[in-house]
Image (cartoon, rainbow, N blue to C red; front, side, top):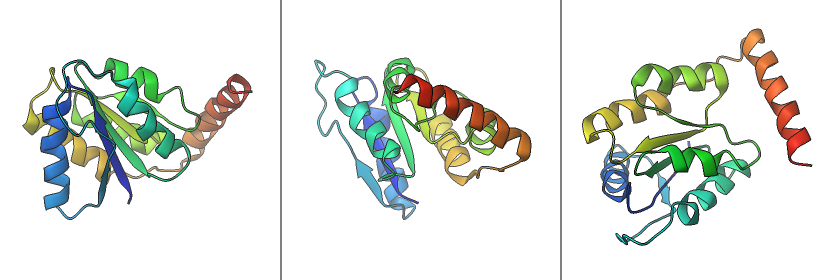
Length: 151
């Protein structure tokens, strides 16, 4: 699985912790930045390239971190094929993948601690889309909305 990660200053510390954790677990992770802590940076500058990589298939799953996670989710969902959500607990992390084919996890670096973030991250990464008929039907409706919106 190809994983990408990105954060602005509000999520920088948590991103670094998660990046090191993923690498220690043997995952190959592409870091889309920020590479250094800059209190004046803006989340779209880092989250947009990550979301674009998910959208084009260069990355299978993305992890985006900003201060609250809200801005990261907003910018990530601007890209066709990206299904991003701000997640604050483990159930939604795996259920979002299983039912909604969530492919970009958004976290709030100022909202949750590293241990909870770790549990959410692995619930997200270990989950698989079920492909059940009802979920496929719903995704088809979402794709139609998306295709109509991105014309």
